[in-house]
Length: 536
Image (tube, rainbow, N blue to C red; front, side, top):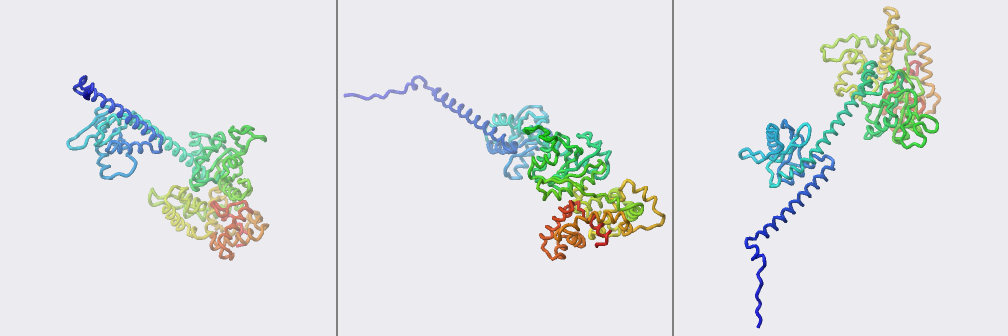
């Protein structure tokens, strides 16, 4: 007969207090803790690679610890909060508690602390290695290992915060330079050449004495990218400015000599097989979506004229096979007038020139005339050009109409007269010519346009339209001008559809080599030319 006797476990005799079992459990817990910590560090590293990494990491910390997590400055200002949706009241209380804790930690000069105050929940705070100092704070966390987690998160969060701050600083510098360049362009457009040269000299490159203006039409969303690419490929020789009026235009002032392309994988190098590559050809080769209009070479003081020429060339480039065009016409209207013309311009603008604003903050005569010139060039978009509200622009235009006694905003005839008067008034020889006018003599626009020189100029302006076919000829443009350059009224008068009228005027733009439908428009010169030959 056999008997089975169970053998007691050996550890019962060797470890009666269970120390080995407890050690094993502690070892497993330690391994689990290390694994969990490694997972947390890996999660933080993944979040650091995302867009908006700081907010993403704060949101993850809030979910991981069970308490709101914020980034606070040493003065108590909340620098960043967690991403995602949160109860506004809870978020506000958490931000206040974190701000107080960060200020207290900064006062103590400590690197980290757990601060408690009465019945308020504890706040875990740890300083980040940043300048200026920033603090990561978690309010009322549930996780008992919050301290170690925050210590690990602080390193990655500090790197991400410094990166975001650097990116913000880069954008601010880029924006400041962009606005400074825009200011240079504005000074050139209003005739303040010395001031523009001083600013440009600090920004580089210096403005050349003779320039060509390039107006580059490109996708709005890619404007900055295209500007940087053109500047890089042109070797820094182009003064490139995003247009303040047209969001899909870039403006470039360059010396009249072709700017060589930079070496960028071209087998022929920067010069290519036939010498330097002109900038407009370079642009359309690099960016097929672009259209480029190029002005003639002009003196720097004539930048406004160069801009108009480039806009006219751009109207042709839109339909040109090569997507580029140079200006080949003439926009100088000073041939229209001698002493009598300058006297007429002074008389027309005299009420504005004599105007004295009632308050110092109100625009004076020169500012009002600048507003008039901008509105004649850009219409309602002049508010962006002048950096004023559209209601301010409308109020100034009403004031100008009251001063001048003409309905500039409603009549193309009044607009054309004001446009010519401004051109003649600002001409370099205007002051001397006005002094030669007979005393007491009153000049008229018809007298100005009735001179032989005006007739020669007018016929030269209209000759391309006379030689064009009926769908892009003189009658189409005359009907449009009689309708005060309003396309719906012109279409009705021609008995065709609105798209049909637009297509005819687009053909007229190609014939003239001038812009009609896009400001600045040649409509004022054409109205004056037709008035001079008696066609209106």
